[in-house]
Length: 209
DNA sequence: GGAGCGATGTCCT
DNA sequence: GGACATCGCTCCG
Image 1 (cartoon, rainbow, N blue to C red):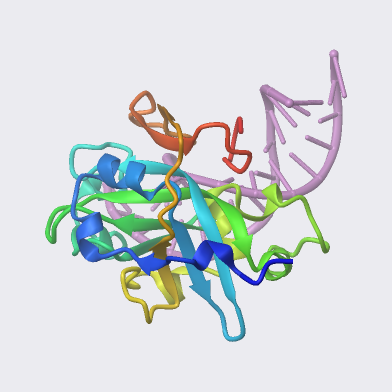
Image 2 (image 1 turned 30 degrees about the vertical axis):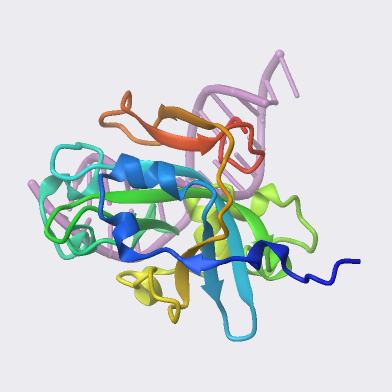
């Protein structure tokens, strides 16, 4: 029996805004292995980032920012380190983090987490029976938003660099051994661009893990 | 285990 | 009106 209840929190700190002030592919790679922390009323839900995709600004036909600034995508054009949450296929939400300096569009889509803390609550939020296969909780962009109760109304524009935020990204100084790079998934335009980054061999990536 | 498909709301043309 | 950075279910092997 360990005296340390939550060893992954030995040295945990929220990532500063400067972490996100770079090109989306740079930030995407760097986000692998970091922790998404979602504070509920009574408990914390935590997952480790194992799969991400970079979406570039005005030059990327697959990016929401390609068409220029609109009401929906405004967060992508704002300062770095803010959550961009959008509603897709009439049913699901997807979580991104804005990057690049203020005024320049760019973002990173969080596609899969390895669940770390709060698995029972995640299963309830996903409306799954108790003790499901953990891969069903947070492997996939729609799934992880459901498991962490992330919605556009509550979380679009939230500052993920604030320690006081109910949705933030932290580091416990873990860094993945090997990173795999592939084309992005589920898009029509620029489908050949190598902008998807996964922790090699991780069982919680959304496909082919 | 993989291909096919329907569900379903919002945004921009 | 059409597209959509998805998912879970069926059917088929």
